[in-house]
Length: 353
Image (cartoon, rainbow, N blue to C red):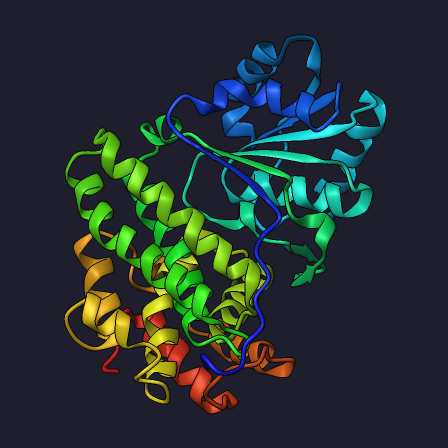
């Protein structure tokens, strides 16, 4: 691998530090913009409105309609808000749902984006958009999707509930795990992936024990940046294909789905690539899948798809969809193997690999 690889760094401008979200207006101006539309979920509307007030005359409104999986009908409503407001840029405040909406708008308009993450999703530093239409989630990669500025302010994550902190972090860890065995991996992406995983390994137990631990919150946000960045520089494989299938077709919650599936998909690939996933096994004291499952359990994360409302009868359809147009994967996949993997994840069994 060291003898042959291609590497291109991210063009995103990263601003990291507590209190840095106060500089959002300055970054809007540095982008040469004057009319920012602030985006959020309905749950974070009040925070978005407060941010708009801080932006003052730079803000032209708030669209607080972002939802999971970025359905295109919501994007259409947001596009109308962009048109009506005359916005020349977007400021996205929140987690993956809000970031996804901003990226969907940017993909259609090429408007500049300033993203202020409040979870550990990591999608804010990728040029990848996942959107849902007709019960199917598809992804597209394009330079216009990558936000221009990402402001990581650990202070904004202090109020993130522990459960959401854990699941969004496991979601980000999935990005890093897949980067370790990606077809187009390179030495830099592998280093960043391992560092991101270690940041979560050390910070998450502290967040569970003391949610107000500022150092632990900053360390987790650092892990989110690293894990998201590697997802933006290498390709996705089996894990993301299955999660996109479950989320897009069955509307399972995004972060929880990633958290549950990660031990199973990583364990499946570890059987074929023990060396590449060695950092995970060593970090978690044992097998790859089993170690990730034990770590998730120790944090109180969900472990079974059945607890998300997915029925056992849904697994046949999920296995079919996931293998119809599969992403590249280092270990060959077939419907029978994926159906068995989904069964274990549905029951919440501990992987052996």
